[in-house]
Image (cartoon, rainbow, N blue to C red):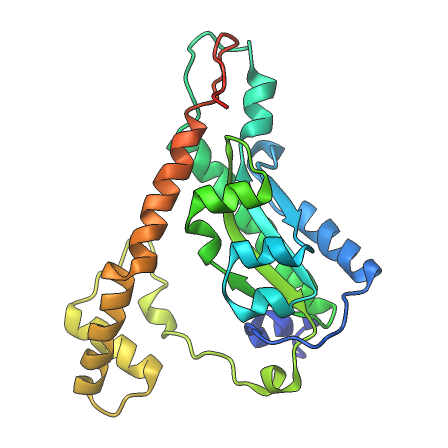
Length: 254
């Protein structure tokens, strides 16, 4: 049986970090917007906002990665509970403020919308790449985008027509399915088994080669400046959510 086009797009999709100097046609942009609006969402609350960033100066404030400067279409997806705190204002006497539970729901909504945009772009002959550094330096990002309390950037999505070199690049090899999908209960693996998992994905000839790669990778992921700043930044951004409330008597800080 011939595979359908949607499935082929999912399996063949890869990130593109270099784009042609060619604009995304308005009709294609509108289809991408329609697709992200159709994403699954908790209670149909649509707890996300999307900011299209066309201003080059603002782009420079959001990321140092070349893709954000070259992509014709840049979208920042934000977890947004601000609308709902205003709608709930006066309807609850508890005075409780939005916390991690609200952020998680809004975060999921934003990510689902972003992935819908990715799939739609791919189906329209466009390519894309996610940039995660929008989660760093939250104070600067919020200032650049004019974000009020209760709105936190989650991911930047760069969309455009990829260069030929990017189109011809092989998709990144993934880990074997058996390590990520289990039935009925979580499958825990030993360190040795997990090292084998990484070795197979990287195609290393020796386990020693994999272990050396892991040492360098851990240094970046655990103790790297980006990892530490990301945690600080998200905590700082979430603290601003506590400045809005479901209570009519609460006042936002400027």
